[in-house]
Image 1: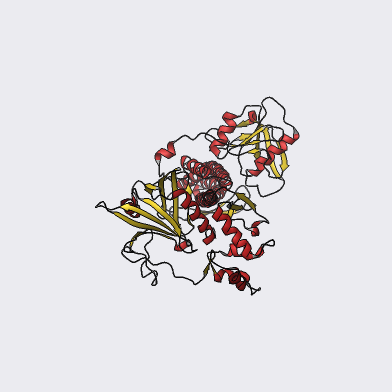
Image 2: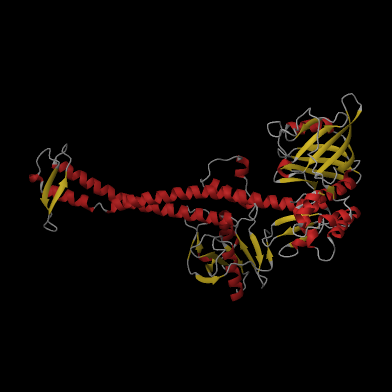
Length: 568
């Protein structure tokens, strides 16, 4: 849990130092459950970000104001009415709970000084932000309205008297004595559970860290954490897993993350919190957007598979059309045997001497039936050519969608996903355009850029439009072009600048091509390479689709070089 009472304690300490006596200048509500306050202080302008979202309940200082809606929500308008030009007199933590109170002094419509309070409850899905009139104790408004239908014990509606969440009769972690702490630790079988049930403000992760500290007692570790936060000497940490994704952060060091995680230290609580939530949200957004795009691609791919099946069935029927020619020939040769109005006639097949029964349409004469069979045969022969052309086109579209899917799966930023979506819009696979101006903008190509051990530069396209630009415009004819063999992937260019590529250069560039392909999770991935001058783009081909000759193949394990430069 990113926010517990200890983290909130550190956050309030930072806010008191930086925001007390500050004046609220602007209030924004960029998302339904998020607020940003621009506060003028002696140290300069500060931006306080507050979120009551269940997946992102937090408050910390940020450097930039997020993009805001054209029309501010109702709660934002209420805050602007009551808190415009309000001065922050104090910021306190309610007991040791995850509740922050911002005390404010402002002026009402009559010009009298009034006191209000903004209460931030950072409690996961139960988080809320409430504006309270301090004279009456009543709720002016809240970002989430909780009615009696939702919670019979505690409602948060305008006009209701504000009540704190029910107390759990725990000892605040800043007030607990050593004897009280040791008493909780008496049951050695469940010490962590005892700490959680007896101490207010600590999370399971923090409790586990207190117990697992081998150098100090649990109580000494707790006091050390409190003292470092009080003195401002604590170094907030964000813990990164082996995939580079933030998994947790805290105001003090947590020893339980010493194994298997990398700890990033920050100078302030807000820097750590901003890094943690920004990167976690970005990772989740990338995953969500890529999954949405992959569903669109899969839907089109499924349609193309069905179309391929039907075309193959039609082609099989058309290829069995020689019997129509035979029927026409035999009817023409045996017109004298055909009686008017008959539905079939039996004749001798002069090719094999066998008797053959030919179906006939009784409405037409034998000669007309023969002509109809010849026409049917001619149409089938034309259909064979057309179906084969259509099958080739469907195959090219499937290959193109597979390449986009591979690039989507390997996308590392929201920008890459947006560019791939725009590519599908331009290719006609996505018809709906939310923003015509955005769809018509020309984004500057910015492929992945890497430096090999020899110092040579390698570039890899992030989408098929960049692949075309990289191969057909950026690269010179003597540079080397790499692409995984029969596996969807991106174009990779090894820039030689007149020099010669060593075997190490070839294998490192091929490993990059394998890394940026659908075979990135495999070993011994085949990668074709050739001179750029042997790579051609057929007329009318989809973005990124090329043909090439004079190629050789290397088998490599997907890997990026040590001296990599991402998104240069």
